[in-house]
Length: 301
View (cartoon, rainbow, N blue to C red):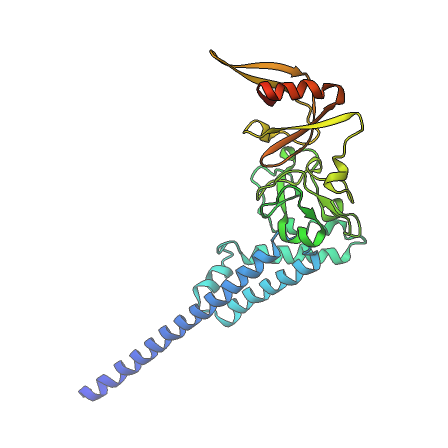
């Protein structure tokens, strides 16, 4: 017959084994979670739209992500993350299968005679669209950019980024790479001719040409004169090069009336407060009189 002391010993032993195992699993989960947080940060960096992040940089980051995930599976097999990764589940923005696929595609760049196919290497990080929509890479504002801001490649690294748009939705005049903006040697300078908000696409018509300052680009012929109007929500839609009509708003006792002045003027630049346009010198006296009588406004045809 088993005594009470003999019965207690196996129970105590089993309890120690159970609590030791639970503690070990908790430690593995904590270690795996910490490493996974670092891994997600690396993945987001690799998939970012930074202008100066080359495909070798992205490959190195993606390889580090892959190594970390393999470490979680091999060294922390008791963790919840390891079980999900082995089952090819997507954890947050990452799955082991997707990471392996990205690393493989980036490694293929080494075998190419030209690096052209790898210039859009961040595209391999994008999820596939359900309808197989073709995406193209374009340059957009990452931060607010002011009118007249000097744009060099070094500065662009801070305020611009690459984004992907459906090909059919991309407007004309976009930039697809840094070389298009700053030349093959990335040493050209441009200036913005209107404000940009984060996420807005960078367009050629809203920048000066390479090496041209704002004042030079917008200098007027000798037979032209410049006027400006205060911007309102409608004026804000105009871009340099647009050719709207010019009207004057006259205030009468029975209300405000619109009086046409010129059927076409050329917008030269736009900022947050004014829209500037040029007209032939022979019309300057007419416009000065109109300014005294009412308020000038640009109007789309």
